[in-house]
Length: 265
Image (cartoon, rainbow, N blue to C red; front, top):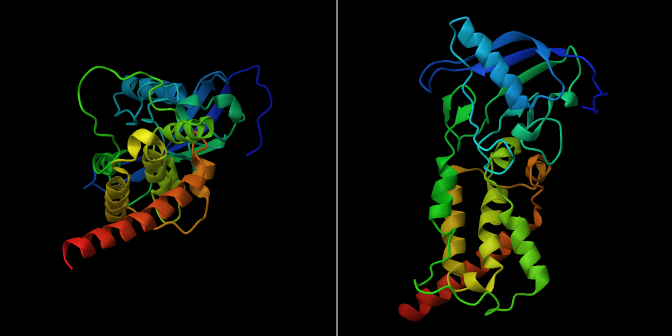
């Protein structure tokens, strides 16, 4: 969708929303007329207005995830006219403003559609599968004690920059929702490589890699390089991290085979 022109007056939007009270009850789309939409509203503020009107009429409000509303926490996110987080690149749903749309637009919103994200209610899905991936290796084990000198381990700036680029992932799930295969390689590789690239992450690098990749594969599909994940990511995480993850996984498997061979000749 092209950028909307500057609005000086309130807009009227037609909103079609997926409503489903629980996973075991069939869902359906419901359509609402939404007048008086300010171009300066964020998308979530527009939904707040819709919910206020629904509650005023004694109806159930639309359930959706949100928290910081600053594009940091990754809680928000759903499909807007078939696009994860909507039409604006590198933007989370909470950062998307209604001036991106035009007066009279018809917007269809629905939850992330992926087997790894079971639906909870309306636009809310269960993303705890991401937590299982992090638990399997997305951390560094360190001893307790006094904080080490910040300059104790020199880190080349390109390495530090790449690690920080990966760490920008907010875990919203847009990459999975946008992928035709429902794959989570972009999320997993970002959470893995921001540790694997650093000196502090080397001790557990290979165990981390195997643990996170194999946990990922129990929940999500396989990557076939559609690159939709990169396009949908609100933080513009590069698919280069997927290539680094695949390389590390191949090395980790080789090292594991060698270790087994040494232990059981």
